[in-house]
Length: 254
Length: 160
Image 1 (cartoon, one colour):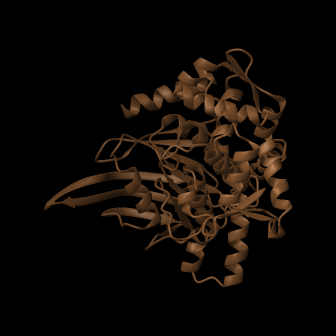
Image 2: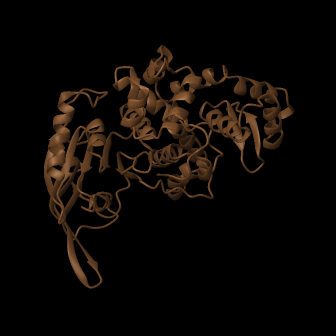
């Protein structure tokens, strides 16, 4: 059942302070955000504005100093096990094969061996990693490493996929292909994950992929504007509305 | 950017190139494409040559254009793309010859050393190390070949 917009996932008046050498500063202030189930939301903002911190607050890895994170109409406490993260730097264990890297989250969750085997095979196939199972990260290109990161996140069958600048460590052409594949997986009815929240500093990437772009301010960070992207998919940079949206977001960030 | 530049062109980069070309209406001036993608000429030509060898683009004079096959692969899903690449690889002399060699062996595998020796003899104009990297990487992508790095052995991927 799909939750209504207000009760699926929300941040209400969230603030987060950090201390650097005895001095405290506010990284995020009065930030409110709602995410509907099934949405693809991109979060953009100036560099160093706390986009990654925001993802970690959403996942429950760090608590807000004040304000509330609510998931399915309940205050969220601790790490949300319905979420999985794809990292910018892939975060693979170099001494484990592709297969064992993908299995990591399932091993940590105490699944049985046969269940792990079945699930890992399914997601390795889905992201196009079949044929690479026994390879080690050092043998893989950046694009293949990020497919491992993606398969590992998907394998725990999260309802919400968080992606922290997932294409920033890839060359431009590989990014084009991986964006395309992530959108295919998001639309794949066999994928349990329906909701994606992606942090990016590339405006074009946000407009190409997301249903809604959330633009953040400089520190202390809050939401400056939320922009719905209504362009038909697959999206083209050549669409006149694309350029208009891109200019609008750029002027808000710069 | 991640790691050292690879001696071969990864399939993800080739598909990225096709997608960009499609957005440009299916064709472009080669020089302009390189400028748009911020690619150094040598690097651009390496990717274009790889795409051309697989039959996804043609390069009449100084232009580049998608072929029907190039259009077709973009329409496919992740595993459909792999299947099509597999079919294309088997049309390349290097891949089809190595496939035959492996099939002729017990266990359908050969050591890296032996393969490089044979490739050097059969394809004297190709760089042996680059050819081997391509066999492993494109072969793995297409589920045509598997490679065991600790045993340094290439084998036919029978999906078991």
